[in-house]
Length: 235
Image 1: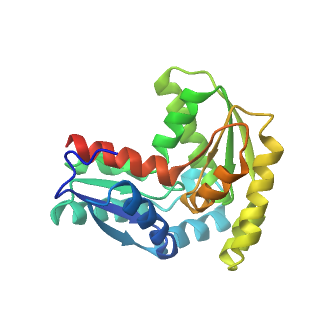
Image 2: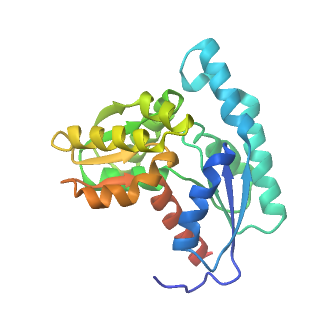
């Protein structure tokens, strides 16, 4: 992988959970070791979304507006300290990138959008695998936007495994991984490609490669950091 144009570059990454930041760092170390990565992680953003949606129902319009302001503020902080681009690592709040862009002078990438763009290029019938219910509305919207921008007609098959996320939060990574691999196995004959909605599922990348599924299974961690690398190379 070429390192042209990356020396001295700085990537800002915003996560809405401290626990997931190291997973992002794993991809950064592999894909762009020459780049300085500055992480901002704020547990309260996802917590506020979960609280609001528990009270009002799972819908994208129930995301607290102050969360969008907070993400934009973090983008401003990263720009001020010299970041050349920003990767926003939350699929639930991917719309925050659209709110922030008019106020930020450097590129901002929603981590799940490159994966969605790739999925609509690969096939028409797309499996959207999610483990967190608050992510589903925004991921569906992101996938439909990617298809519309590409002029592609798609069919989305929703695959939801909330039990996998509960296992992960309880520290049972083995059960989380097993449930998701079983879900992929069960759907691989029904779709052309599977997109894993949250970066938390990106940890399965090696296991998925070893399983030898008959269709591509995309994760937002790899595709998001590859896209950030491309942006930094051209900036």
